[in-house]
Length: 192
Image (cartoon, rainbow, N blue to C red; front, top):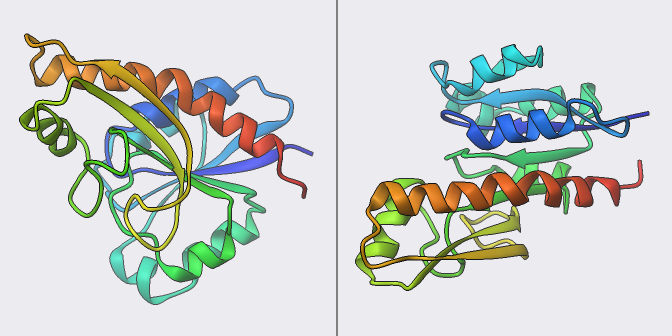
């Protein structure tokens, strides 16, 4: 029986797409559901292109009820991947999936993490600090933004002439290269 992944995303979903592509032909793992807090998120179109079911939820459903956790349990989801999901994960979801929920952050944590540090905000902060390197961190999700145990980090060089788009591009190249592979290795270790 295939192990089942749910992806949470808030926006475009380029990492979600790389995961969908990666697992499309897998005999062991499938992307079973894409969830979002944004009815206009492009990730919904990406999921539709791969014929993956989606679920849109609001703040009340996510934080005040067990509906999202119940949905994941009913669909027998084994592992959760955050791919550009901007809300803090509530305790009930963390307790339902201990050690089975990961996030990718567009910097080398612990630097440039925390509330409000996502997407371009991170890249701008890295550049403003004059860092010679940027990078990515794949980490487990806990009850705080970007504080879960690190699983994998990769770095890229920031050249003096790099603008925001170049820095973002270099980071996304690393994300797309490593996130599906790392997720696959983690999911394969799960025992049902």
